[in-house]
Amino acid sequence: MIMSTTAEKNSQLEKRLNWLYSAFQHSTDAILFTDLNGNIIEANQAFTDLFGWAHEEIIGKNTSILRSGKTTKEFYKHMWEEINKAGRWKGEIVNRRKDGSEVPVLLTITPIYVNDEKIGYMGVEIDISEKKNFEKTERWAAIGKMAAKVAHEIRNPLSSISLNAELLQDEIGNYAGVDTEEAMTLLKAISAEIDRVTSLTEEYLQFSRLPESRPVRGNLHHVLEELVEFLSHELQHKKIEFEYQVQDNLPALHFDRVQIRRALLNIIRNAIEAMPKGGKLKLWTEQKKHQVVIHVADTGSGIPDDVIEKIFDPFFTTKDFGTGLGLAVVQQIIDEHGGQISCRTRVGAGTTFSIILFLDETEGDKQDANKIDPDRR
Image (cartoon, rainbow, N blue to C red; front, top):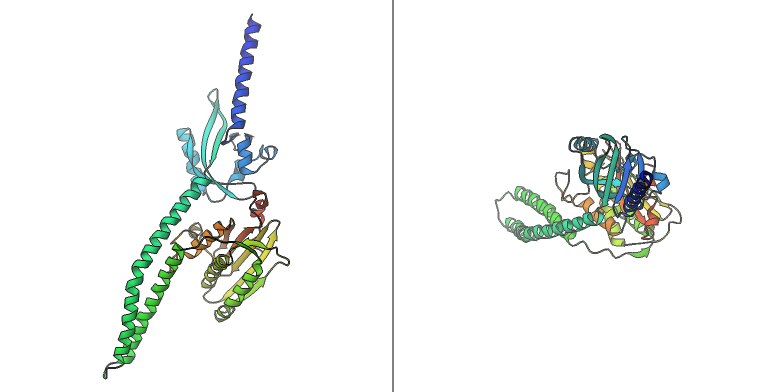
């Protein structure tokens, strides 16, 4: 009788364990279990699907392989302090897939106890990419409306000031005894400032009206060669040594010629401004399987660590005069092409921007995005 009861309990326990394991495996949320050192003991199908690792590859790996580099050591320190203090942590974080691409997740970490002894941790990760993309789209739309409103509000009075300055120049020339040279110098200074503000308003308007990307199949080198020719005089005038290398037989791809030219021009202009006393600028391309990569490297002063994370934010600038929209526009253009952009920099040694464009839209073609070497010069 006792043996029968024990067998029945074991059977019920086995059913519960099977039920729990089935729920674990079929959960739409990515779930993993680790030991106390963060080594992965088990992970479900949703986890391997989200991060691109095969089950046998991920077991035994440390969770540090998921770190994207966008989260500071200080953040992780506070996170673990919260886990130890409150017994749970929940928050948004950017992790990294096997192919190097980034994925924003809502992460929950909970300690696991057996007989009051902590034996490991459970992590639940929910992909919030769609939520982030929606927020980004809404934010860009709001910024665009604001930029358009500001530009329109400034444009009309600027036109009036400019016209009156021109009329004043004509009037001054008709009066004897007036120090026309001094007056003309002042008016030219006024006109120069008007031109600067006008260019800002135009940049705001262009940003707010950035057209939808219309990609067509074409040769990227044709765009690059036109851009090089367009900039050659300016580079020579600024005493910047220029090196241009293209990979032979680069395949055609779908892209918006005008938009990609604009993105590259913005990056190159930034590089030129980073070398006010001259330097070296290098532009080169390469193909990595189903990717075409464009690198732009300069020998400027580099970008400080506390600034690098903000360079693609709209309106962020370290310049005394500017909109802070240049790199934000670049980011938007590359996003609309389904591409990626990255920045590698070292203070005092220069900066390299790398743009990755994919030959097609399948995720399988994006697997080597993190293997590009932007430091090759």
